[in-house]
Length: 454
Image (cartoon, rainbow, N blue to C red; front, side, top):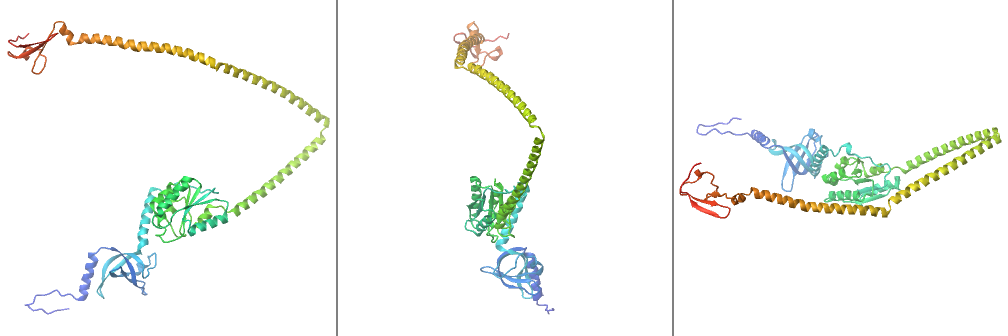
């Protein structure tokens, strides 16, 4: 587009609307980084192209948004009017209408999106710490003596679990440790129930469960304190939270995961019908083996009867009589030997009893007491005499080394009265200096009138 200008009028940079919109678009796209924006979807449009166009609004403002087909196919849910979402978008301008808009590159449900990020972060951190390692997984008891269920006592999950357990094996006792499984304070109650179950030690396996719900409803089972309590449990734990498609952190930490509460009950309880069938099979096998054993014994008895009939009765009686005589002789010898052994043992015990007589013990203790009294008297005399003699020797040695004793023998010590130092050399004093001389008894104060070097 050309514009006429005159020499008196300065040339102006005049924008066309298209150019203006392009400039504004470039300014918006380069001036703003990708943003995370939260709001409610309204005016949702789904044209045949597969793109989504909608308005994102909150209580006081709104903005137009576009989500192109390649991004729509990546969504994990279907956006609807009224859905609260969190979008990542770039600020742009729709040039045909001159309206600024958001080009959405990522969308997630607002509440679940934040929770999902927190879920993944905690999951990755606990996985790195080793809480999911198979080495920590413990086997479940084949036939539990008692099953503990940590859940809401009024929920559908506990009814499903009890129904399945009554159907499969009604003889297993079940203890329900009640805990809130949804909302504020639920995580702390679940941890308290885990601790109570371990302290009471009534069960040998625990089931941590609740029914289905939203991610926010299931969130107590994604709390770190619950995960660490499950990992620290001394009892094996089965986690059955939500529906089959739901996963929570406790599913990864627990010793085993079940898809539903009912599936957990199936996992923990043996089928009594199967056990009865197996017992009947064992009974049938045992009866068959007993019949076979009886038949073998009958056959053997018949064979023995035939042998006995073939043998002469007198010969059998002679052998039995000889064997009886032999047994009587062995019995007599054993009795005599036993009596002699008991007699020798009794005499040995009597000898030991005499040695342990209180009279002998008192005599030995009296002798020991007298000996100890003499040793004590000797030690006391040594302890008193030896230090006294040592003190006397040290006193004499001290007197011999004392400078005062030297003074008593006629020697003296000359001191400088100003600083108390001993004068050992005549050059230490000058004529007119005052000196102090210490004798064996008393002091002499004098003044130097002359010195002489030795």
